[in-house]
Image (cartoon, rainbow over all chains, first blue to last red; front, side):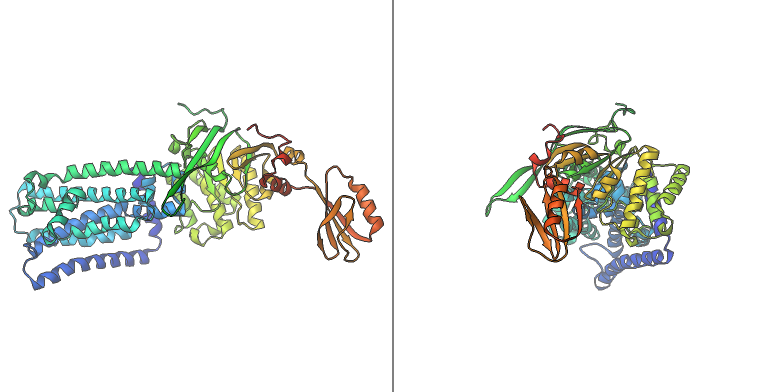
Length: 263
Length: 334
């Protein structure tokens, strides 16, 4: 962790040597993300509810998804370039250094610009929370940071897992992107807008439903359209832990594969 | 296991690295062949040595380097670098060795060289004071000052290589492994790099293992050469010894007063004719002086020179796989 912070800081300082371009990029990143949220509001100008959810509720889902995804992207997003590194052979440079390859790759090009994406997510969350029509019990309040953290961990696990796949399938970058970026998109909307089988898939196969959907059902006091037991609403931390463990195993296997084949 | 301080720097015993190559064997069948890139290599490198590791393309040089540095895991055999098993103790070993790949940089493209070196300091956890002193020293030796603030991607190849060398030596490693460090460099840059390597080997006692295709590197720097061919170590010994053991022919270059048909003298014939100039290959056992005298009697000669077989010829013979030709010297027991 300390190494991660030190390396990230070194990169931030390096990027900060061009303050104008840094500021412009941060603003541009923030604006693009805001447009996503604006699109949701546009939808609601035509209909009061979408798939049974009000505008603040959908914005709440959007914000929690965006927050989790952005933080994970901030921390690990550059790992998606792994296949490229394997192909170009630049992974070797990482392996001859005395720091975990994952940390080195994750911190590469770390820039304060990426922080720009956090602004819309937090702003929309701040906008949506007071407008939610729910009784704020201590449990509901505590669930907000918990779901943000679990969601981040689930996305983090997905980043590492999809990166690990690229050790073997060097050109799978496009396919693995659909899991991470696709996951970010899917979790922005109430699962009720999707087909039932798809929802089963993102619940049981790729546990995207646990990023924010399941805990949100608890916060918003909604029944689960799949009829899962109430415990599922609180399963996110456990799911996140399992996924991260699987990702760690896959990563190690990937490194071992690379070191035995060299490509 | 404590890393030994006085043992050899590198110890390799029967090291093998085989890859499975998937290829198309038929229309549908996919064949799998095991390729032995390194096939039972054994050698020892002592502290403070400067060793050249040679071999034709694809002979197994880079694979060996990658195993030594812990990037690749050996399929079998034992390997110790700085007393550590590179495969199991990759991270611990990384702190004690420096690695430079001539073909690609280990620096970061978008960062100015100075920031790249700061990042290296973080990775190796060199403390700030030691880093400053070392950086000042390397900056002076490698003449980095003019381009410390330039992003790596804008550096010329020679500048980049000097930057890479600085990055590999900032943590004061015991062993420096260089994979073709002078590839593509101009004469001036080559000289700077060679002078620098020679100096750190002499003054700091840094052990250096270098692969190269540049014979100037070897003649200038390496007291010892190891030659790998088709995954096997073909020669391991002194450079002078290698040159002596190879029974290489000499070449006589004769410039006649005017163009003439190819010269034929006894068994010797001109191998190449270019205008008035002719090249004759003289076997070792032939008396060159007698030959020149005979030539002068028959032709009007404007100029004449006798060229001893250089290291190029020695290696060319070697790479051609002309085993009988050079194994007469001091071959490595298979």
